[in-house]
Image (cartoon, rainbow, N blue to C red; front, side):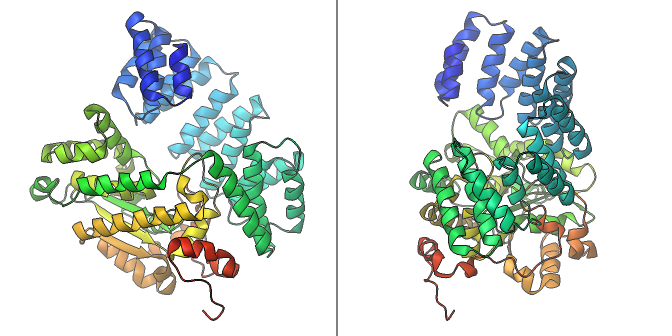
Amino acid sequence: MRAAEQALQSREFARAVALAREAVNTAPEHPEVQRCLARILTAQGPSNEAVALMRRAAAGRPDDAVFANTLAVILDVNAQHEEALAAFERACVLAPERADYAYNFGRALSRHGRLDESRAALERALALDPQHWPAAAALIEVLRQAGRSAEAIAQSRRLLERNPADLRIWSALAGMRQVRFDAADVAALERAGAQPGLDLEGNVRAGFALAKAYEDVGRLEPAFAAYGRANGLVRRVRPWDAAAHSAEVDAILAAFASSVTGGDVARDDQRFGSEVIFIVSLPRAGSTLTEQILASHAQVEGGDEMMDLFNVMAEEGQRRRQPLAQWAAQADAGDWRRLGERYLERTARWRARKPVFTDKLPGNWLWLGAAMAMLPGARVIECRRDPLETAWSCFCQMFAGATQQFSYDFASIGAFMRDYERAMRHWRTLYPQRIHAQVYEALLADFDAQVRALLDFCGLPFDPACLSFHETQRNIRTISSSQVREPLRQDTARAAKYGALLDPLRTALGLAAYSTHG
């Protein structure tokens, strides 16, 4: 078990699984051994075997909070959300002194849109441990998701009064659109970023927040330099293999060389999956705005960024022990129908109140061939924005966790965007009637006409609430949540004011150099 845990920490998944299975073979009914293997299987994605193992383990230790918490995590990964929430709550009951369990419960509640309950759990975690940074940050995020930006900002400012050097709070504050840093903030951030003994995370947070502060006060050359330094620090610890990504895209496009895959299902039932609207895009290209417009419609529920499509394919890949690019060619119409039914089963909660829902995970662009085969009635909205604005916005964003690893240098951004463009050309060629391009700049130019065309493509009657999208009250988890709670603004472009400083990025994108004459 110790060796398996060490292999897991090193991300040697195959070795970790093999070692954990040896332990299970030695002591098949030992709850700790079952828990070990279940955790390792779950580290690679959804797993029915992990769920079964962890149920047995928890049954063997019914009053152990650690087991209840692990069961909750594994159930949540496997989309058994109500049971997961009950298990998270059970862990809190069994160990009421554990701030981390209250935090886990609060985070799970927020992921499922139960923000009032989430806030209570996170406040309980902070009462147990006032220094629990993840709970403090999560509380700020819950307030932001709920559209209570003023409270989120006030909470951040209160925490900074207690500790003006807390770069985690500065980072959260920098991510809120309504915040405009001033000269005093710049000075405070410069002091916080210069404190001795700062670790990598602290330096990265300081860099991105300070860059944003410099930009807010009009100091663009220092802002550009600070963004470059911060991105460079992240790149050192998050390498990006552009060639490997391109090869993965090649393999998937080859596996879906034609729309024949799933064609029998489409002929049998053209409307299967018609309740689904996929929204795909590059990051920072307007997908949250498009979803907010659609989610303002009386018939549409906004599902936000969902992992269900990926997880359905991951389950199938585990079952077949092959990646998508290999098993897709072997799948028949019955397989695609089964997978489509599994996706609809996993996403049923989004149809509890309204008949149609959006799945807005931007990265789903890579899996559209599978999505189209699984759900022949589904529609796809592709959100597009000026490439330079999109690329620069990615470079200026400190993305959560290990997401969007391509975004930390200009060459990688250019390569990733080329992969995206050729994939979308491929899907548009195969499915010209099922993909609608929603261009951000076109929305700015003629909002009413664009919204009507969008609704028409989705087969929805016109709803005037879509024109007042910023008034729609819903939970939004993405970093653009505050932006879409304001009326559409014409001043969101940022790249042009940096002028020739962005010429290296223009080169990476294959664009002409900056010209003062336009």
